[in-house]
Image (cartoon, rainbow, N blue to C red; front, side, top):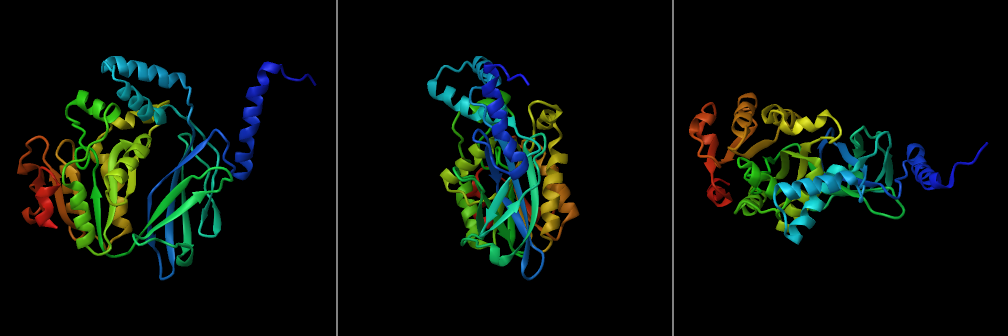
Length: 348
């Protein structure tokens, strides 16, 4: 046996550091786990179905891909401001990570440890647990917090316990609660990567009014934004004081054809995301909130046709002077256009 050359030792040691994850679920020191808030539903008097969705990746802080992307976008948008450059680096970082596949994570919910399924090529993993209500010690908002099992770091996640009855707010993000200007592509990219996020006026107040007015009110963001922007979006909503919500975003992997999902038909995508929520909670009433910039009108009108007994209201932020013909199949008492959240306070 011939020992490996000395210059290969760092690479070999790094590889050996990752081996335990395949066997024990230990998270390597250069890896990170991000959990996304999910909605749990009650399956009988004592037990809940609890989905767990996470993303295992290595940040690649010195990634050449990221440097090239930053340089290219910086030139395209003529970025010279120091703060804009910092923001661009931070927003692009999740798109250039090294996704960790075929690995699994252990989580601790209450006093019990659960092993989750192995991650796929994009680093995502989705587990489905059946837990007794005694294991789920939720806060006043019905949210249960859990952590990945790791001795040195904390990777936390949250489960929203959604009662069988009540009202659910399903909302788009871009140009509905966050100003994006999607129809102006140059402004869209600047608002996404170069500027601090800005809220649509009155939407936070509207959401809190809904939370106070409706029994067992829950919130769910369904957006075509990729999960790579989740952390930035989540921090933005928390900082601005929006109620906690579950997130249902797009899974993409920059290295393969899933990247094309960013440009796929938003109608088909949103129908596939929202339909399972409606089917999981057949006794709940739903308020659908979106904007007229893409296909929210058509998506929500189609859902109203399929689930007329569940869809209570449809609110569309009119960003391009759309007329009522886009919602002609929906009863006029069930929907309305708005400019900002203040316009809807009398509807709550």
